[in-house]
Amino acid sequence: MSLEPFEKSAALSLGVELEMQLVNTHDYDLAPYAEDMLRLMSKIPLPGAVVPEMTSSMIEVSTGVCHTASEVLGQLSQLRDALVRSADKLNIAIVGGGTHPFQQWHERRIYDKPRFRELSELYGYLSKQFTIFGQHVHLGCPDADSALLTLHRMSRYIPHFIALSASSPYVQGQDTAFDSARLNSVFAFPLSGRAPFALSWDEFTVYFDKMARTGVVKSMKDFYWDIRPKPEFGTIEIRVFDTPLTVERAAALAAYVQSLGAWFMADQPFMPAEDDYLVYTYNRFQACRFGLEAVYVDPATGGHMPLREHILLTMDQLARHTDTLSASASIDLLRRSVERGENDARWLRERQAEERLLAEVIRQAAGRFRGGSGSAHPA
Image 1 (cartoon, rainbow, N blue to C red):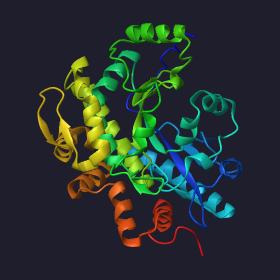
Image 2 (image 1 turned 60 degrees about the horizontal axis):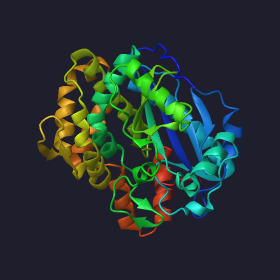
Image 3 (image 1 turned 180 degrees about the vertical axis):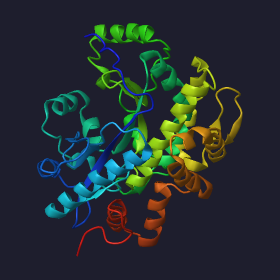
Image 4 (image 1 turned 45 degrees about the vertical axis):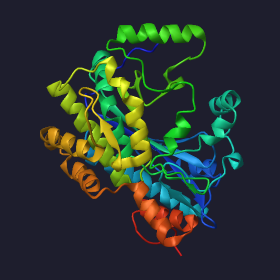
C-alpha cells in the first residue's frame, strides 16, 4: 500500500483530539457507556467529531480545523458542555487525566469495531491496557517537506509537552512515582517512539514503502510515534500529551504547539540533526518521571539544565509569535504553571494527600472538567 499524498492545509492551523474517561457516579470506576454516549452526542449539533476509542469506557472528541487557541477553546468548551449534559442523562461523569487511577485493565471491554477487534487480536492484553487517555494536537504545515522539518524540530520539545500535560501519576491504585505513567503503556507497542530521521517527503516515502512491503504496516495509523505526519490532513500530529483535567489547559497546550510552529517556520532557529536523538529517550524519561522537576539535556550542546528553566527560556523566545497569534493568555496560563511547578499530576497527588481516597479524587476531577471545583455530579 502506497503512502497517501500530503494534502494542502493552512500553515499553523490547529486541530485537537481529547480521549476522555467515562466513570460511574457510584464508585467512580470506569463505566462501559461509550455506545450510549455516542448515541446521545449524535443528536447534538457540534463542531468536529465524537468517536469511539479502543475500549468501551472511553470516548474521543475532536475539534474542527481551528486557526487560533481561542477558537480551539471555544470548540472544546462546546464539546465539553455536550459531554457533561449527555453524561448527566446517563448518571455517569466525564473525567480528564492520562490514566484512571484505580481501574483494572482486565475488566475492560474492547469496543465492537473491526479495527479495534483486529488490534486486540494482534496485541493481546496490551489492547486493554491501552485504556489510557491522551490529547493529540494537529499542526497544519504548508507542504510535506516543511512538515518533516517541523516534526524533527518539534522533537526537541517533547519533554516540554510531557511535563506540561502530565496527569497520570496513578495506575491500578498505586502512585507510580511518574508524573506521566501513561506513556509507559504506549512504549510497549512495537511501532512507538520516534519517527525515522527523514527531512524530505521523498526520503520518507522510501522508508514507508519499505515498511509496507514487509507487511508490518498498511497506513500511517499503524505508527504510534510521539509525532507522526498525517498526510491526509496536511498536518503533523503530536501525541505525547496526557489528557488535561480542563479544556482551558488543553487549548493552552495547542497554543504552545502553534507558537513553536510559528517560530520554526518564520525564523528557522536551528536545523534538526540525527544526533538530536542521542538524548531523546533520556529527556523523554526525565519528563515522564519527574514532570516539571525534570532535568533537560540540550541536544545541541549537551548542557544540562532544569526543564522548567528551559521551558521558560523557550516561552521568552516565542513571545513575538505568541503575540501575533493572539495566544498570550494561553501561554501565560502555562507560564504560571511552570513558575509554580504545578501540573495536573501534582493537583491529583495533592487531592489524594487530602482525601486518602482515589474515588473522591476522581469525583473532584470530574467537577474540575465540567468547569467547577466542587461536586462532579448534580445532587
